[in-house]
Image (cartoon, rainbow, N blue to C red; front, side, top):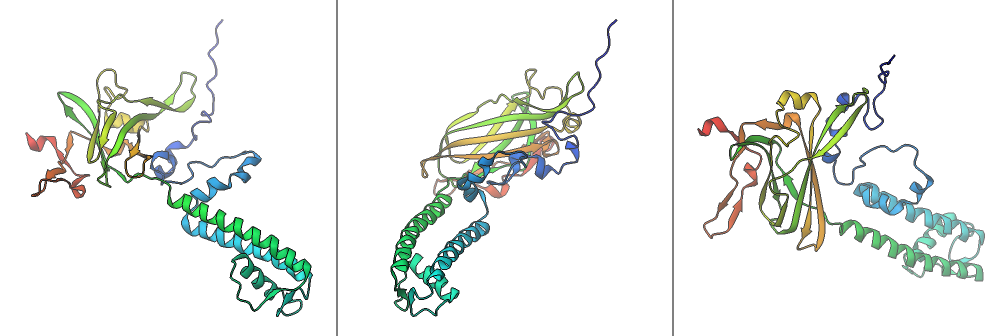
Length: 315
């Protein structure tokens, strides 16, 4: 006698059980700003406390400078307490004055040397030697971290606000546009488009499934102006036969990843975007944005980059 397996009462850990109620700005990882934490990770090991370099590269600029200032003050407070041990170790400092010891530490760490205060005893001179060496390391570390933040390569790539589904050579085709706002070449650019949607297995487990969409052209040897990325919706496509209502019901998301070599920065740059079902419009096409100036230069009009027209109006 066969028995029917019980349907699990919970969803897969890969997907929140109230996924539909999660705000789109949160659940769409591809639309998060650069450096924004993609998820809250619970149960990390102790190595997260040593990941300082990653932290200083991802925090906001105000918080970054606040951390630098806090570190500078903490270092000087530590040395000020050590200077205060010797009440008469600093010339022209008030005996036992913690404020004088702190500002003497600031002058030593910053190699200012105003001349008003100076070390007197052997203990204070040894402490000044240690702090001077610490100051060299601190300034070098701060300079390197600031340069690392300024020198990080990033793409100024613009994605169209919407994607369109319209006939192309008689085949329904999913299309969206990408533009390089710098107007310079991105060498060996490539784009990957993935379909993400909710899927319920025969056992009743709901999870987020991903399928890569085949593109008419996924590489561009020289991407400088505008690029219309196209996916034909033929019988081999996961989108074949679907309606806008079907896409909405399955919480479909078109995830786009683009990368290439910036010829000026001489480094690879990356950009990402996503389109939800209600950001895909049907039977419309994009307005032309490329033209020629009077001097013969190509002109990309980004003010029209997101505009579409109805296909019916053109017939």
